[in-house]
Length: 118
Image 1 (cartoon, helix red, strand yellow):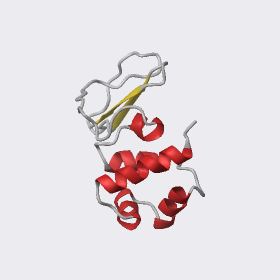
Image 2 (image 1 turned 45 degrees about the horizontal axis):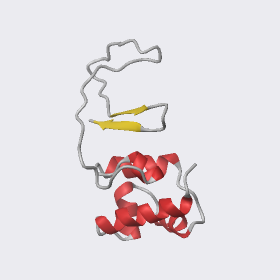
Image 3 (image 1 turned 135 degrees about the vertical axis):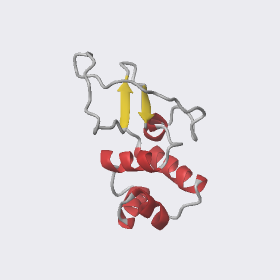
């Protein structure tokens, strides 16, 4: 479970790193200004959609660091990953030429994960 106070601390750290105000940050990730204010004040908890918008807008932010404070910010290395998509039984299947993979997140049993973004 996410410690909300620590999440707010890390969110403020991200905003300071990019010299963003709550208004500019909300505009960049595509949420209402009030959403940022409510999260920063502790009134609301961040939704998965909110977190994914942050990760989509800022490549240097690691999901595990943002949620749990483990890892580093900004990311120290960027992994490149080019592989065919797999389905739930781990067999590889072809994707159509019009489909493009946007992001792959691999979750490990120890709670760690890797985020690969195209």
